[in-house]
Amino acid sequence: MTHRDNSPTPENDRLTEATQRLREIRDKIVESQRESSSLEDVSALNKEAQKAKEEYLKLLEKDKDTRSDVGGHTIIRSEYDALKSLAKLNGESLESIASRIKSVEGGHILKIDLSSGTSYIRKTTPIHQLSDISPLQHLTHLQELDLDNNAIQDISPLAQLNHLRRLSLSENKIQDISPLSQLIQLEDLRLGYNRIHSIVALAPLTALRELLLCNNQIEDISSMSGLSQLTTLDFTRNQIRDIAPITRLHQLKHLGIDFNRIQDLSPLMKLSKLKELELTVPLLPPMKDSRGNRDVIQSLKSRQCNVTDLPLW
Image (tube, rainbow, N blue to C red; front, side, top):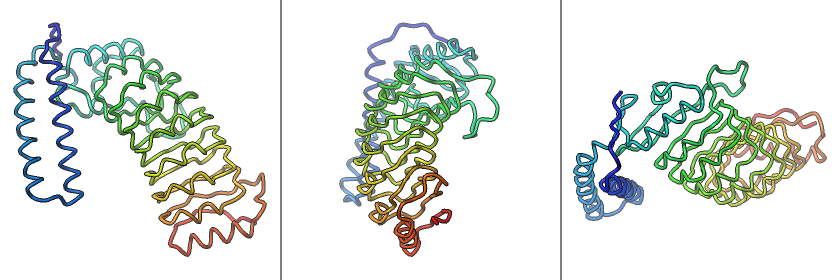
């Protein structure tokens, strides 16, 4: 492992800008392909991408002395220092932390898996669990971050990671999710098995496509009514009674509402794209209109929606 202790150079800032520019052009190319743009437009974007890549490679060569090699990756010094601090704060080795890096571009970490396990039902406590994640605030280019199965309570260090598209925080000790409200590029967010009561902070996250909130203490889901891009939503094992707010989520294909306190299933009839519904009715309290709710389920099944349910009567 090599650590070069040179001071940052102006090239470092320019390299960051070049990396962002290259990423933006790549996104435009993908979007143009989705929209079946003309060959001329696609060709122009490809030329622009090639030019940006050449500029990026030149800057990368100039900037190489401000970087550190760790875990088989070459990353900028500030991110190296952040990993080093994270390891020290949580009693782990730098090598162990660095080995979880999944993707690096332009010296910046884009993807890292810092989970300590994969099970959603923790039967034993892992030897190493992260609790202090404050150094992660310096990994400002992160796009995917996995922190499942740790002992995290404070997620405020994540507030400035505004390039995040996928964030997994299941199986922690989180109550306050307000720091997530600025992460408007998030498309996949996993918060299951925590201690969350309020999800008001999720209202601005309109790019979300997958949202997992199972096993919390959520009662009110009205703040998710504007998350119109959601295709997967799971809020099983909460304290929810009213599911009317989901009627505006017209892209929903997969929905989990097991073990809540729902009395009226009629809002489900407005989800025309629903393909899979996980519904288990708890013994208490009993549903008021069993016949009406039974009709809803039968109607969903007739629309080729796969419903996993128990009898309503």
